[in-house]
Image: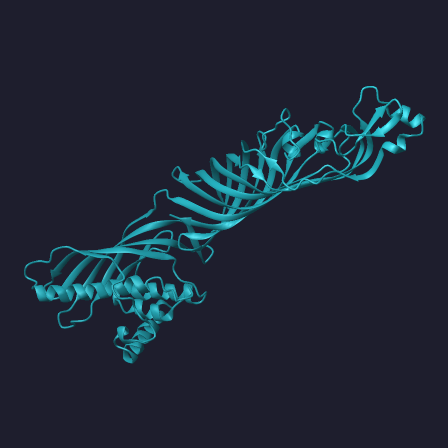
Length: 486
């Protein structure tokens, strides 16, 4: 079977050579000019300067074609038959190549390697995920036949592996640097051509720990711990926030299952406090401090209207809502993560960290309150509710669904807080050193997001700041972005 395949390959190669003896002349495939980095050592003295330049031009052309064609990729990332043809033409029929796509590299002849590529990449319309780094010409010699033997070292970063057990191509989580040692032969009679007679793996090693950059978008929903105090009962403000994040990680240890995690982020948050039906007590401090809500006061001739302030005894809040829009939350994170392979190419990453959060001062938002209760003058000798009721005059002081003054500018002070965060995510490789990263996070506040100021209340201050006892922020986020191996 092997012999038949070899005969078919040779026949195909002869037919191709018959149809087109010069690959560079094909219009359907344009090779970028001077797209590779090459270094040359001094030539031996017996090779004249004019001939040295011709050899350099031939070597540049060969290495350039190798760099261009060895990934077998078309413009859309699929398999290119033209590159497969070009690559085949760079080697003699009996040249020895190392198949570095296997877990254990093997040395095979040209037709075996190109057949392997055709069988496993053309049929699935895939290409090799690799990057050409550079080449160095180590020596140029003249052999007894008068031909030039050129020894070169080529470096590439490979990000792909062929799994012989599953017969599938895999994207490696980390690239490997492959150093190839090649020998090319140039015949003086063939002024514009040369071919590889050998291209073997000299070194292959996984790249040293690299940094991974992960920019992305976030959207989160959460709650503040709130609580019961100052007449408010079990009030828990809600939050909704969209934002951006930029994470940086670096592997630890030989297998890099652990990594350091650093990051920064910004969120544009809206905070809503709904205290409908959750307040009873004196809300005079939430009202107009000038006492314009009620002007009743007690005199010897009865209850009259006047300029003196009243205290408001609230039976119930019909509706009460405060909305703070556009709070900026600037955060950082420092922690550690664990990487777990969940499939042949996808990785689950679980990060744990401490997240400092800075809430900038705000002066935007609104508060609307309507209440039912009693407006009673703030006098020690004024009759209480029971006395007023016994005299059948309580209705004069009763208010139902009364609109409290509307505050259209809520303020809150800046504050610094800390949260603990866990953030699992999945990395899905897409191309060379990059891919999609998506996941979620949950953070829990270790201290208050707001600075609480119960001794210096102000009508325009947020209820969260002036009246609630705590504001530890718990938040669930979804996160999506890309990752880049640096």
